[in-house]
Length: 267
Image (spheres, rainbow, N blue to C red):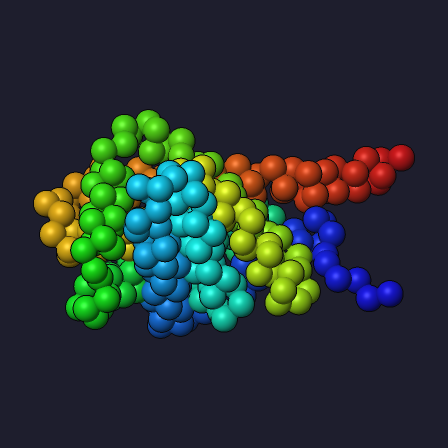
């Protein structure tokens, strides 16, 4: 019987191999694929805004679930179509821990992809504002989301961001272990739906959610967008997806294996 998924140990190896390939991308490839990922996440964000625009007046829980249920299409596009997403690439720290590539090479990927994600998010936000598809209810919802994200206390933002990217990289982790498209879709959908429904904070999604609110008329400055949301959320995302998950799986499946080999050689 054909094996339909990878084991956790196999996912670790595959994730490290993928990280090696990501470090070998040219700066142009990193930027272009980063722009695509920013656009893809923006598509999910825009769909989430649109579907939840009026349900808050009927049932807040239903509105949040519909928003959360729609948003994951962004990561599905990234994983299946191929793009470079900063938060997903936080898993590359596994390869650094395993000495397959240097910290500098990983950071080069993170920085260029992060810039590309921002460019893609802004491009889509600018286009959407000028499509004529943003009715008054959608505009109101988009501006409310943007303003709300800038009024969260700094400590809460970082904690929400940590929890968020634990789930995001686990979605990527499960999608890596899946061998068919349907499985990859479900692997992306459940964790991403859960993080949105729970109210966690994702730096790349916020690169779309907050600027589109600004473009639609919310009185917020770029400095406030970065200082009061995107920078602290990015820090939290790195802690959750770039440190906690990679370190735990490294200790469980890489370091423990090396320790076992060392003990065997002493016997």
